[in-house]
Amino acid sequence: MQQQLNVNLLGTLLVCQQAARRFSAHGGCIINLSALNSQQSTPGSVLWATH
Image 1 (cartoon, one colour):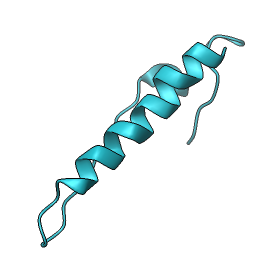
Image 2 (cartoon, one colour):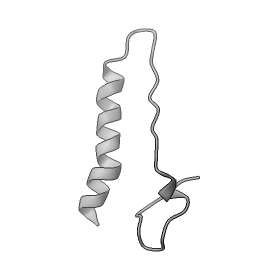
Image 3 (cartoon, helix red, strand yellow):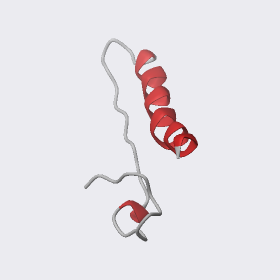
Image 4 (cartoon, one colour):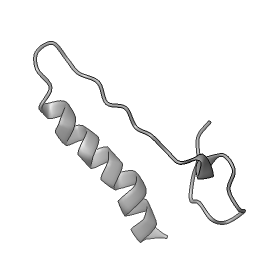
């Protein structure tokens, strides 16, 4: 479970932090996408999902 959290949650967070550091003075935008599986999943198959 910890490895899944590290890849899916912490990995996304760290990539977004690094991307935000490279924004210009005018700002920027990060768009995170997720799979349909986060809304229509088999019980016990995903660690978290947001709607």
